[in-house]
Length: 314
Ligand code: PEP
Ligand code: MG
Image 1 (cartoon, rainbow, N blue to C red):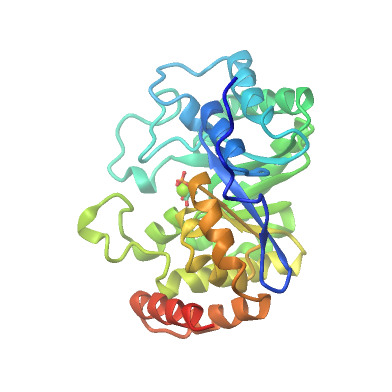
Image 2 (image 1 turned 90 degrees about the vertical axis):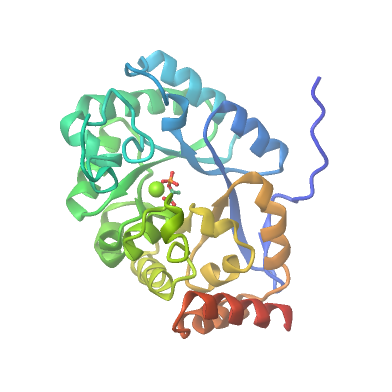
């Protein structure tokens, strides 16, 4: 029997003054769920379902999807697993939904947008998720990628409801969704900030292009301002707003995100221990102070350096 590795991570994120911050894992497939559980994660904040089916020419059957989803859910009995519907397109084309030729695929038919031409694919995926959720005890939340409008949010929430999936949320990864979050979160039960794409679309800088890498950081004050606005929109309705982009795994940025109003941080499992370690050194009020400090800086570099210096000197 495989022996679980030593757990450096207790499973909880807690500030120095005892305020709990949910720390969750990002997973892409059943093997990733095993690794996340072994790392001590108590739940999944982002299950990127498209990774189960990359390279496929044909849509996986509902049964096959149910098997994959159950294998992930089974690792987290009684715990939350946020299942993201297929984020196909741009850097992750799936031949059965992604259009053949797009001049600007990052601005094209990707994420939830694929459901306009292929509502049946979304419908079958939701059916598979609902079946898996009934068979396993994990608390399943469902989330749509690449949402920009309230209309898209409404149609996704309705589609989930039709499958008996009441916890339906959206990713906030476009500036439009961040700015509209108070309307979007009137419809959706929760949101999660995809800071990788939110940074890409805010800075108009391809997330995979080395030539614009200097622009592509979530420390950009413009990105942090959109995080603040998105969280404020969630707070109006008492809805949770998490982060599941790489920003959540940056130990200096994590307290800033908490201070901006983010309620959970989901990350690669190997980052959990370090992020929990930094959170344990700051109080909740200090997180708010760090957020103000970061927002007050004119550049990404100054935001990061001023926050880092402040945390080190606390
Ligand atoms: C993101 O954009 O931050 C995100 C979590 O989604 P992905 O990286 O899968 O696009
Ligand atoms: Mg994304």
